[in-house]
Length: 250
Length: 300
Image 1 (cartoon, rainbow over the protein chains, first blue to last red):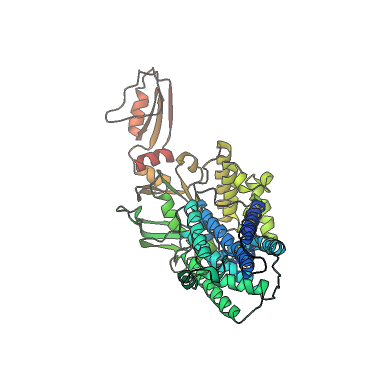
Image 2: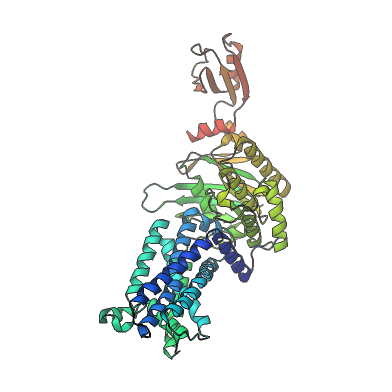
């Protein structure tokens, strides 16, 4: 008689492998578009900024945030909406699998898929815009913490939207609002006061600040606040999506 | 003995609907039994099944699996039941081999045993030749067979199969019923089948519930259901088109094609019909009423 369920770590490993296996058929195009969008943003916004100024650093770091946060959010939203529409969520719910592990596995798989985009954007941006990179070891913590909160929001969008198409539209809308309502691509000094005031509510603001510190330096005490906010939003969004995921009903 | 499933007064009303999709349904399924849920499209079959596997929460009523209320332990179903959903796209884009392997491993088999079971089940269902192909690229029939393999992975004591023979050709349908009968006989697996294919299902089903508009109109063994209708003999008559034979008073035939009638008669009426059979009748066949006859009678 086989055991009835696997330990959590083995469940997680299987779920990550399942997601990677699903992604293998489309990973090249996903990586390519994931790289192109932030690189084009870097080049186009960078062309309008003065070389050697804080503006180009903001453009470069903002583009890295785009790779990490919004690409993940949109991909995760589409994936959950697709799994819901196709009955995959129902099928997985009938296996002895914890729902939170499915969320973490999905987000982790898409995070891994976004890393090439981060590396290419940072390297190419530094080369073309002449931004001196000063990579901090804190990047190991900052990069996943930037990706996870919005991936969680993407998952919420995916499971609550009626169709995959609706999920895609809502997710893009959320991305646009969060990118332009804060100092993500555009430095804080160039934003109007009301945008700066509202930007404190956006996780993208804290992500941009954290990325700026760990990629271009210097790392300051502000990083602790950024990480705390990102960790808080991450925990909240992942808990929320886990609780809202259509799953076995008690 | 504790039944595999015990369902009491199950009611489910979807939000915004006045009429319940499932209305006060009660039944038990004995351990080791093959139970069929029959009904027209929209009769509530899948809604009942989705409550059995806790994908839907009943508006009221109780579902117990091996004596335990599934509402108090929703994980119980995942540990005891292999479920095959109606949607054949549920496996996403995993290959056939990965689909079975991951299901077996997540259901608690060691990686080695999961690989062994994967190979056995792919062979059993005849999809081993497409083991490395994405399930999204399989034909409808191959995907259905793969879903059966996935549902069986992990050797659960209960199998719930929603429309297992959809998309399958007659040869493969026959194979499905044969494998399910064998599984039930050899391992004592309790099997719940949702189908509207009464002709095929008769080969495997031991007891049946016929649903109509969310309620059971009949439930029991085919023999018990036969006793509940007037005619227990099925008579098929063939005659020259436009020249039908005379029938006993009060008997209404069902058209079964041009120049063909299907009658459900009791023994006396069947005897009388045969005794004064019109010479123009070109063919007559007598048999017991089939599950399809019962289905058509009770679902009407």
